[in-house]
Amino acid sequence: MKNKADLAGKKLPAYSFAVERGKIREFAAAIGDMKEIYLNPERAALAGYPDVVAPPTFGTVINLWGGMGFIEMCDYLNLDKVRVLHGGQEYEYLGDIVAGDVITVATTVSSCEEKRNMYVLTLESSYVNQRNEEVLRCRHIVLELK
Amino acid sequence: MPDFDGINIGDEMPVLRKEPLDQIWLVKYAGASGDFNPLHYMEEVGRAAGHGGVIAHGMLIMGFMGQAVTDWIPNRCLKSFRVRFVRMTRLGDAITVTGRITGKKVTGGRGVISGEVEAADQNGEVKAAGTFEAWIPLG
Image 1 (tube, rainbow over the protein chains, first blue to last red):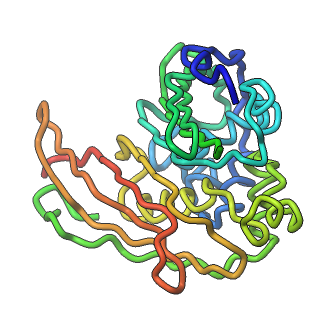
Image 2 (image 1 turned 180 degrees about the horizontal axis):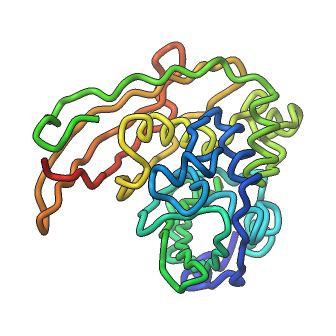
């Protein structure tokens, strides 16, 4: 696909996502990780959290339910969705994400490299809460096979 | 978990064994995460893409890896977590997560440990491999 190099530096539309107890519970259940701090506000409080806390990979829920879905993202970045694979994911944890938070996400395509048999795109996101504290950074590595 | 002095390079994390994946896992994860890529629930799409059938979400496997790490280290201690997806996970695969400590240091009066974590199937084939760092209070 031509002009992929133009993707580097492209920003995705910013969005906000309200973190709810029920969504955290649903996500924890989908992984099968039923820690009390994900499910029970009293137990979360005993561990020092203001409400139930999000599991370490919950950032993906914020991306996909708050922002573009997979198919919209492929269309926006001009990727052929049938050839797209997830190459990797990196999180840097700067603070807690708990139920009741409203998280605003800004995402930029930080690089797009052409390899022999694929393109490798890196999407970098910054997650900021309602107190303007950056709580999470994420690098999402997207592969498009040639 | 042990305190900083009790953690040594080479220490193994407790092993996490997940049950074999069936379609219900993939449907639940699709809904919970919002990843509705049809590769994960439409057999014919997975086959047309050359995967021989549906494949699991990479992020589900990373979720298992995060579960294993936070079974051992409190969530709040986690500083970073990075995973590369190496091979496809298919229906019937039973994922086991293992990990070990690869480094420890003191920075700015705080303890930091680093580790590696791997998710492999019932045949020992690695599906995803990653690293993590965690803040560990000094004793």
